[in-house]
Image 1 (spheres, one colour):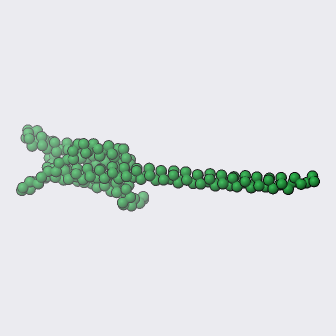
Image 2 (cartoon, rainbow, N blue to C red; image 1 turned 180 degrees about the horizontal axis):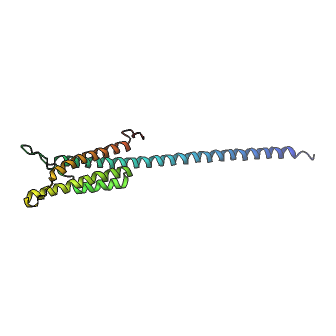
Image 3 (cartoon, helix red, strand yellow; image 1 turned 120 degrees about the horizontal axis):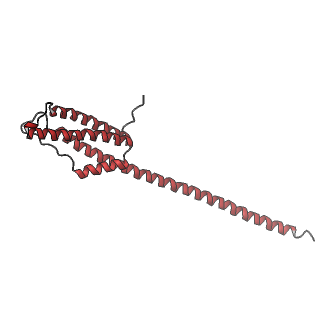
Length: 185
């Protein structure tokens, strides 16, 4: 009679152990599912963040290219070396607000390489603006004429503006993934 209690205790113990290990297995499965879910959410957040950054970058670069094209058209049409009959209309520079907004977008979202190309291009454009002002002053007051012909310098600047703008456009296309990166030597 002393051993009659062993069987029920063993059954209860085995049942308790079964319940415990079933709970433990379920808990581990829930923890695993939670970790996977958290990892998926983190991945989705990261992808959404990267998509927003890419969209901002694309918008900034498109605005930059738009402004660069408008300035390029101005550069090509301002004070031509030879006038036509009738004279071709001079394209205006983009409004100052548009230029400022473009520079702000590039400063905020552009890569260091694009900012460098933009600075180089803007240096040439500013030199063109100063040369145009100089030509206009000399033409308005013939006593202010200098020995060198600023129109010849303006033609050289036109070529520099076109080259720096094309280099900027190429760099933007590379960064947006529309052209392959140049091979390093």
